[in-house]
Length: 214
Image 1 (cartoon, rainbow, N blue to C red):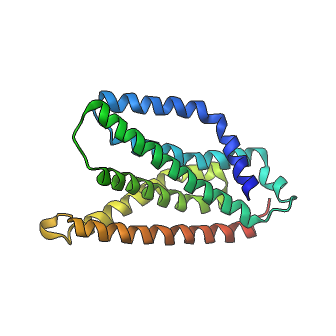
Image 2 (image 1 turned 90 degrees about the vertical axis):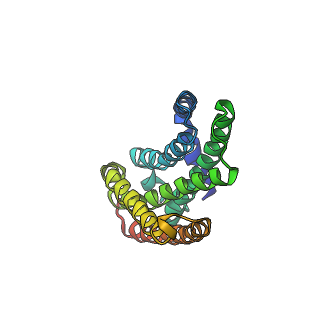
Image 3 (image 1 turned 180 degrees about the vertical axis):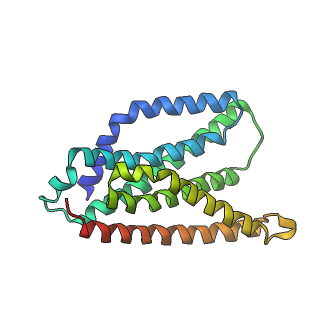
């Protein structure tokens, strides 16, 4: 599986220059509009989208048909993409967090605690984790291009669900406010839910790929 992952990373180098230009644009935007919090959100989103780019390259080249003639099983194909997603989210988190801190220093904006910034960026990463955990089984079932058409629906469903849960939890706090204790409980529950949701998504994708015919 290491070879599959390295293949994906080498393929994604093709869009490396485009992403550097995109990151530069985000930095300039955040600097001039004094909005450093925008940078990590867009960075995590941009990095996570690369998992679809990787799947698109494989589909265009007919890679899955070829690789199954090698000593690679179908579960490896699924496992590789989920691991790639986690690595991309981690990279987006690190780059976004670093950029957020540096832009804050440059604009000397409002002082926000490092813990609050990490929590905010982690929350964004968790949302995109849920989004692509929802989308990946559809990709393995329908293919990349057909699944892309459902991306907006997945966006709406995931963000609506997150917003609804947040409003529900907020209503449990005193005077409708989210206390620090409530945030800790919410973050812990969200982490457990995200792990279970990702595991469920992976098992569904494995079941789909086992029955898929090329």
